[in-house]
Each structure stands twice: as structure tokens, then as C-alpha cells.
Image 1 (cartoon, one colour):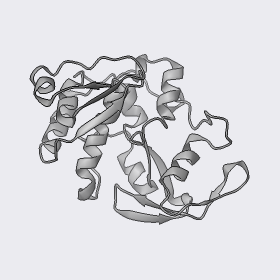
Image 2: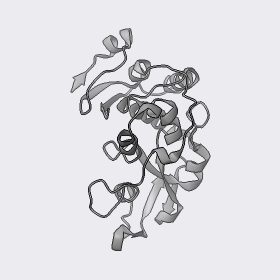
Image 3: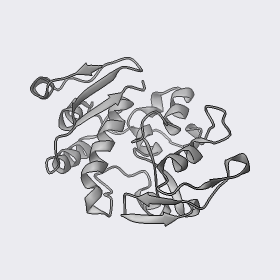
Image 4: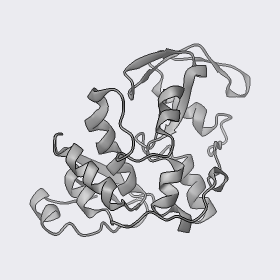
Length: 212
């Protein structure tokens, strides 16, 4: 694990470098400062470029079901072919409890379209599949109401904020963590908004295991 002292990390704010599997820990504002700043890529994007949902471990439950099972506040019943019923979930974007899985979407914290524009256009198909089904960091995929997920779409924090103000600091902190994990860039407006939002939040340390 690489541990950066806050003063050292903030002073230089170098781009973070590490091999997949390396773990870094640093304050979230320094992590934001270290993200590369680039204009968003405008090449054609399709969700089909990110294969999901897959059953990577072959246990019969795909990534969507795995997230639902892990995040349930009341466990659902699991039937044949990992069909889930019952259960209860908390949607942090809108401070809402949801009964049963049908009203939920699995949100990519950094949406697939945003990921594409922030570097994934140049990734391999395997890397994009791994990103779309990332169970290696609980901040990457979360269960939220379908309404909030679809309102968010592919928007970044400059374009969309969680309707529940109490989720603001967690949302922006986790956004930076996911972008750090996957080596994604931020565009100038996105970075400015993230910096403004995080200035009102605790400068908590984030620990990230690099995915690429």
C-alpha cells in the first residue's frame, strides 16, 4: 500500500501511477487534484461497448444480483437462476427505502457514458467489461431507485446532484474514488464543481485499489 502524507500529496498533486492491484491512500481533495484534466472525448458511444451484467465467478448470480444481495438491508429470497424476491434496500441518492428488487436499478457511480468520455473509449473490451461489472470496490456499483438512476443518466456532478442533500459528501467522495481506481480523467467544469462541493465536506482519506 502507498500512503501519501496530506502535505506531500497536495503540494505536487502528481498524477497517480500504479499497477493494477496496487493500493493507495490519500485525502480525497488530493485525489481529486491528482486526476488528469482533459476535455471529454466526443467519439460515438454505445452501452454495448460495456458488456454487462456478467457472472464472473460462475456462481449463477450476475453482477446486478450480487450488488442487490450485498446491499440489501433485509435479505431477499433467492430462487432458481438467482431470481430474487422480497427484501428491502436503501437508496442513498433520494433517502428512500424500497421494498423488493423491481423498483431498483444498479447505478454505475461513474456512468458508462461518462466513463467512455473520460478514457474508456481507449480501453480494451475486457477492461470495459470489468468496469461495467466492478464488484471489487463497493463504491463502483450501488442499488438506487430506478427514478434517481434514470434522472442521473450519464451526467457528471456538474450536471446532476443527488436529490438528498445528506448524500452530497459521500457522492462526490465516491465519485473521485472510482475515477481514481480506474485512472479516469475529469473535464475542467467537472473538476471545478467537485472541488467546490468537497470544500464543504470533510477531507477524508480514501483507500483505492487500482483496477488498471
